[in-house]
Each structure stands twice: as C-alpha cells, then as structure tokens.
Image (cartoon, rainbow, N blue to C red; front, top):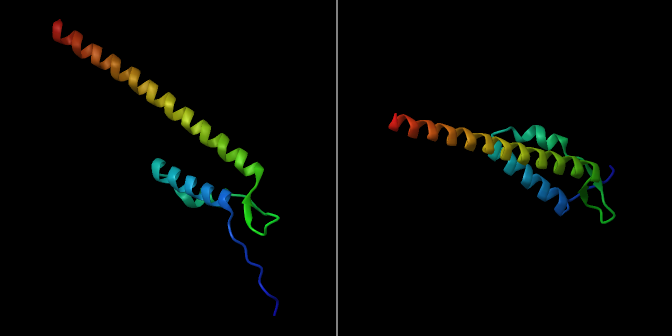
Length: 93
C-alpha cells in the first residue's frame, strides 16, 4: 500500500480562511461557496500556499466590496440628512 502524502497550510492559507470566515459572518453569506473558490499550490517547503491568481482575485473582490459598503453608507447618510432637514422644516411650518 502506498503512503499517503500529507500537507499543512501555510500562513497565507490560514489568513485567507480567517478573512473568508469574517466576511461571511459580516455579510451573512454562506462560507462554503467562498471556501470552494480558494486555490492552493504546493510550496517548496511542502506546505500548501495561496496562488497569486487567487490572492489577487480575493484582494480585488475585498476592495470592491469595501468600496460598495462605503458608497452605501454615504448614500444612507445623505438620505438621513435630507430626512432630518425635512423634519426640522416641518416643525417650523
């Protein structure tokens, strides 16, 4: 019987899994689909590391999501400001 080759995750994989879990908790999304997307390769040290392609994709996706959150917050803030102004006007009319 042949010996089974085993691997350990390097720190890039662990940090990506942690970030993915945190995002899933914050956004209320299913983590399983995101974990399935992770791409790894065998490093020279015999561990599994995140591919540059996946890391670039993940960082781009994360930056885009943060940008959308900031935009959404700005829109909500502007809407709230408008509603507050309308309430104040209503008090004096």
